[in-house]
Length: 546
Image (cartoon, rainbow, N blue to C red; front, top):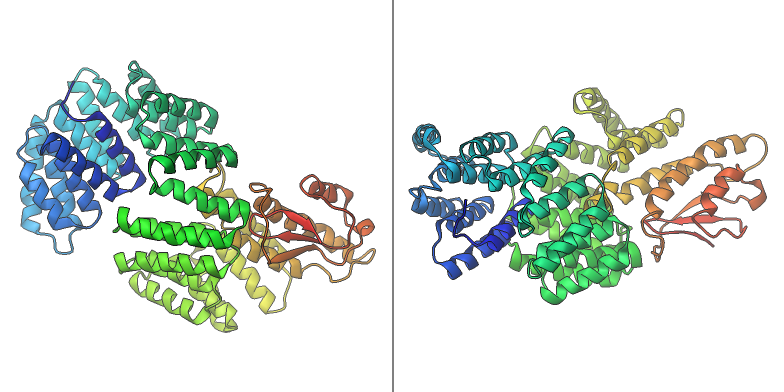
């Protein structure tokens, strides 16, 4: 099945759609329209990009202009229904007419109409519906390779372990042509999902050699190098990407992450975040989700550095200006202020978020946190009981366990504090299972949250250790501190320069540490010289003796 569409253009569009970079999609579509004339498939993807950026009227106008194209009519009808439902004032009669048209068109649809319908449904995250359309397409086309590749991608991105092997089968079947970038990228993604980063990297290198202008392959290579914990190679690739495209968002993000987590150079990182904010204004001006995501990632690995938090707060404010009815972004504004110890301002944003969405657990947790920090213990205890009661329906929450422990410290009670913190850490770290080192990992690690838990653990350690009584308590608390410390240290052994320190062994002479085995656990990662205090420089920074 051959078409006149630009392969490279479509590959870029598929990649940017899956990355959620819809202004990039719009730009690629416009460039292809300029080069090839108003080719309907690129007009469709421009409409799709406008739709996902909230420009619903403009998207509908483009879709109306091409909805009579025989290959795109089916996907245009589905997209028009989707656009109406996204609208603040949907036209019910139009939706009903479109649904009738959809039933009729679906009966007659051939190979290409089914294919583009499946592509649209895949890109909006409707994997089951997309699979239904592509299955029909494969059947009517006698196993079209194009359909088989798409089927592999749909199964691969559905997030279901059981579908991964099937995805590989489809991608392998379609890889008779080494020039099929879409299929090669899919196979590399399969290896990445299965934690075979070296295998994925090998495929990316093949794509780079065969398609040197296809920048996403270099971007993915950089991410894979970071997943392999090779900061130097990742930075080298990032630099080569920036030589080709000085505004590449992923490469700029990599440099900022390096400055924060590996170098501890907050001043330079703050300048680069400010520059990234300006680039976002140009390349993704309507992408509230991306602005908020970047703010979360950078703010949680900066050790509450005010230069960084000033920039991440500005990013979150930008996100809220774009999407001012989003409770998640309003909650993050509260989080950003809380990181700056502005409790009253944080509480106000949490309350606004809760008004927007009365079921928002993060907003409720934020309000509760403020109550505890302000000393409103009775209100906090009542709120905690309510949240604890609904925990069975929402699943275990590390933050709720932590807040229960925090309340115990305010009440000067230590009965279940260690057990609550143990549960909180286990729940939190279990969420990182099979997440490779990268932006998502650092976001989910939430080093700031781990530090807050470590601070409570430290309160359980005695000020002076003496035999045989307090040494027993220290023996049990010490490895928990180690668990947190190693979670933060492991991925960045060379980072430094953070003022906040957690005392791990407080006023303990070297020869009276609780366990030689535990001390050896530390010494494998640090240089201990027998001095009386050992500190953990928080924020994915190394253990240092002082």
